[in-house]
Length: 572
Ligand code: GLY
Image (cartoon, rainbow, N blue to C red; front, side):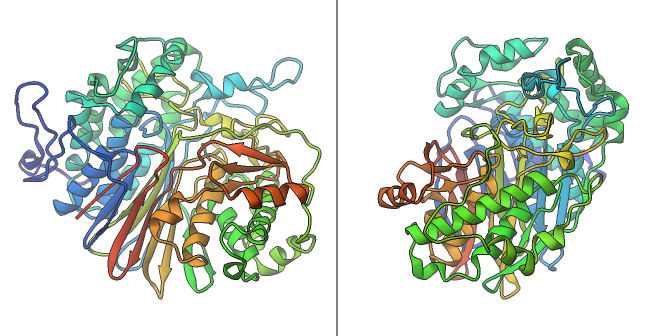
């Protein structure tokens, strides 16, 4: 951790002003007002730009860039800010993946996915009759893996320029003084209040009102104190000392498994990014323990032999081809993908042309293939993960997808520490054939083992054109993440769309099991009808993804924040 002096910090200190007037200060002249802010959906920027799920987080990120930080600095400050202003998915009690490219061309892939605690075991969510008890993997103390986020941020800090404390301070300011919540956040908190009460052992700020409404101030003093320990002690401020003690006490009160040793032993991992070429563009995705990079790679490489642009956007021919590739890639996910530290993932084969050509041999242009009769669950709308895309003026690019898994994770707030814990254990295959909350099934590759990382679908992705930064993209959405990223890339490369259209056009999704196609509202009805006639089961879906995308065009950074949420861009 770089040593930070209070002198260096003085630019970032919070002025003592009357309540409600205190602004979090990110730097000289670049302040963010937590009580008056607007959502901005897009724009073109000459220098740096940040796209996130919340306007305050985007503004903090842009202010960090304007105060001398680079994309890695901004990514750290934004993730901590999201933990305050977007508690449903932003987190310090969860995990994520960062993929970045430095201005010198180095690709950085940092894995800070949660791990199963040492006391976890393969059948921990099965009852005496062998039936899966997914309420335990999805809610409350037993659902939490060992959090990775702070270790990940500390690991990415070596690429940053500003003092660590300066990157943590905006989040502290927002937690301590509060901020005005959006209408969407008010609705989301209101629908979760009962669960916060049920799954927490102490009251939290989330239950400080019976009913939340837009404009109410959310103050999180205990979270601010936790963030101060992280500011002052780096990762040790989370994994050791007071914060670790509070987590373990919470585990004891709720019969959870995470111990002081689990916390102390947690390390982020540096991985080799997935790299492939699609129609001349270099694409970098996240490798296992996320399935994201492999699935996006398989999908793009399976459609590459076909002239999809000539078929037309959302034409029957293009859509059916893409659905069939999705079916095949998700079947591979269920069988072959897991934490590479515990399971040999055949990455090269899964992405090889020979293998993918073979996979598409039984694809017929006139009818639906059939997945299997194995029963699987339904796909849920999911805003519970979150993604941020950043490009700076120097030429660094960063994509981060981070999550608590379900909305507000396990709904357990760590008593005295003020932050939510993840329910990421549900992303393991708790029993072969039993779907997780996203309807994904798995097998031995993703079985629970102490210290193992659960399989993810997160797909933070970078694209280069002629060796230069071109696109940063990613989205939340559980198993729909890779299909959303896939379709956003196809929209740009094959259908020549703007960032805004690439993100906002309706999406579709197939994940092998359940054997059905989910179509977002507004999807071409004639195509839907034709697919039905070919034998596809069509399901109407709620919003698919909340994609944040930046694309270089005409020398400028064209940014789009998904219309499906409060997502917002900020840049200069
Ligand atoms: N928790 C969702 C994912 O990692 O895919």
